[in-house]
Length: 186
Image 1: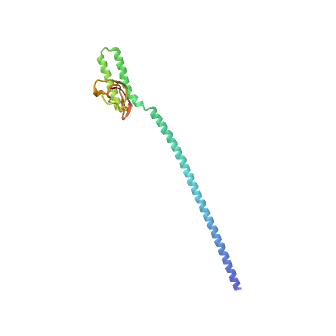
Image 2: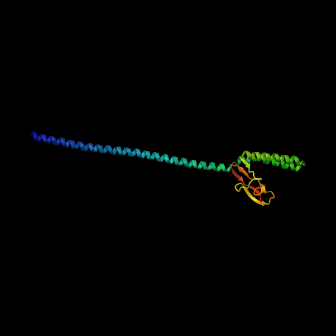
């Protein structure tokens, strides 16, 4: 009886340990499944957060693009405003000079007034980076000059040189604003 009792107890202990190990593996599996579910929830939350950030950033960039496009349009639309405001006093001076030409018999006074207007306009252009291309008696340069005619010259040193400027050329800072129209000696 004792041997069979002992064997039966051993079987019971083995059954219990088998049950415990199977319940341990079930608990471990449940624990791993819970952990996986929590990780998936965290990943889903992070994904939702990243999608939200992406949408906000995309909308912000779209607004920025629209705003800068509008600013560029405004800048190009009103770019000449400062220049035109600077030229208006010169136009006023010309109008005054034209009125005085009609009533004045003093040509020297009119010439002096027009000279003052010319100086005022030249100073205004210089302030805005416009300067004249020096051409007379210089070498012809296709990058700076447009030849409108060639004329024969007697002096040997004037051949191939600019002998007359028909229309002055100008730089705007370092860019050519208008080419000089010139006559070349040959």
